[in-house]
View 1 (spheres, rainbow, N blue to C red):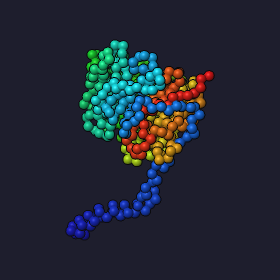
View 2: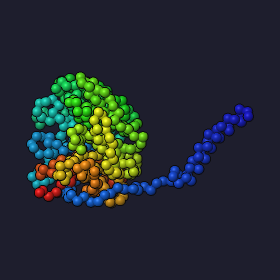
View 3: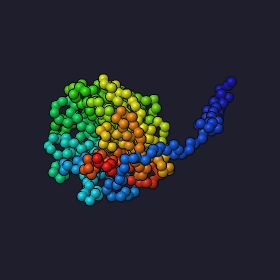
View 4: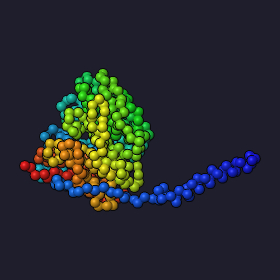
Length: 432
């Protein structure tokens, strides 16, 4: 066959084969047809433990974007406050409950470029609480060098800003710990980035100066919880990486600022949607376990629940072995926290969802997992309103000695209904 004939024939094949394949695939029921949108929502029996729902602060305006909520006594008055990162307004606020049971908002920090997390800690050991802010720079996917770690030093009634890490990609989390054993607090940093990211530790060199050390080069790091995972007396670091891969990493502290990285777990399901990581001794056996919420599909314009979503407990078996247990199948699980909600002495788990079937009013947005004392969990539905919840904290909000719940809404995706900013559920369990 001559060259004049082969070239046009090759061009025709290049064009016709993809078109023919596309036409043929459209007739296959499993590939060419659109799935039913928002099918498969998750719901559970109504909680037998009663909760009272209240708005924390003013009613929501527009589409609030809350990236983090915490329950913490930030001013040392013995009463827990709610601290929240609001990327819509670029602020970090403290919400204090007054004597009449309403919540007053005070903006602590402003002009922040998409804050992901606020770490409340006395970093300079002067007796008051400073705030370390993880700066994304852009809430949406972005691989530019726009992330920072900003330290706000408490000076009386004011905060003084220091940039302690710059020229990095989107920073998602910062956690404190004395990693080199020199008596001051260093920092673990999770850099999510987008296509590129990393895990760092920042060595405290005094006078609010820090030197960065890379532990892992991988995109999608969300949280870096610090604990003594191997029980040898020093602080280690764990990290969940969720971008190129879905992996759980541990960084064993070898002393003098040296770490050994260990891959603790991975899954072949690259769409699992790991959404965070918390440390907790869930089985109360004396070592630190890990809890992983999984259900992040914010990259989908029409986010809906998947059969592999839920919550995973990684039981610490010793010697850096963690055994995985799936303890919930809540669709779109995005955040978790732990507390003893029913006051029976064991630890229960609270989950919130950002991607359930919101067109079905029965779909759960807040769930608690009742622990029977042997780490067998029963799922109870607390709320289906508001929706799009991506952050949750458990603690005593009203000083009655019982664990309550607070959650924040990240209203990025449709449907834009049942909107919430910051919402609390006060535990109404009758005391004996």
